[in-house]
Image (cartoon, rainbow, N blue to C red; front, side, top):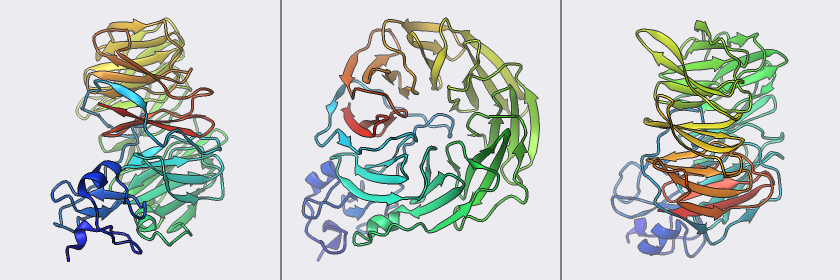
Length: 419
């Protein structure tokens, strides 16, 4: 009997229809989420490490697409956008502040009341629910099947792969949890291959923590502290962490030791409402004078700061790729080349306050009225438009290989197809 062609979940085991399963990412018998092996098309559990049919590695595709977490370039361009997938919108009924994550057909939506809903990207069906005892206001991180959630003064690690494997397990207890000395979690979590990094804030002091993904133990003997007032989200760039104060100082932190290796002034105040964006070794930021500027981290010459473009309106969001920069502002959206020269500006649309998506030579922007707008790099007129939701826009949208997903501030989740 060829078990690899059957549902991988205990309690089901029915024969899978390859074509239907690859499209739906769900077992048609029990409704459990699955992933299909690209090599042999066997059905596997979500977040499985290796295919049970041919043994090929099944590396999970994680799409936070969140500015400043780490360099993430989506190479494919978008030719068209469609209406919401069947099953959406999903009304979760609770406020969403933190950005969602997507992994292997799964949407992970963290809500302000501490619950974490696991939704099928393809059908909107809830595949599970986890939770922590405090509200979630910063974006979690995920690596190797584990979800790291910072809430209040604690960090929780959930083994998401194990939770999804055991469909009868409704507990969803964390594998480990630990306290954050030095205040409450203030910024999105960062991960590399073995460590999760978190910034906490207590008054005018920001503390940067490095914790083992295995058990939550501290990696650094002394966590670096920055007595500089509020900071922008810490950034992973070229195997180092960059901490930028809103008052205009930047700090380079050694990943191995946690020591501050270099401090340099930027001579400008950072716009607090605009998250920085990492593109290769460049950090794109906005200042309070409505200017877009960059920090370039060169290993030989040291950091350099370059002013790129003075905007006519206050900058509200930024995204970047190798060849251009997208700036959302109170008048609409502007496209710049990598040196800051303006290519076009769409000034007749609603403000774009959440980070746009750069995909190949196209841009997807969610305006403050809840409309999804598709632009190409050649002209300022949208080539596609779809209504996602009304009401207040929540965290930035994200893109996967088949969908664009967005969450409203009220907790309505929408996934639209793109080609």
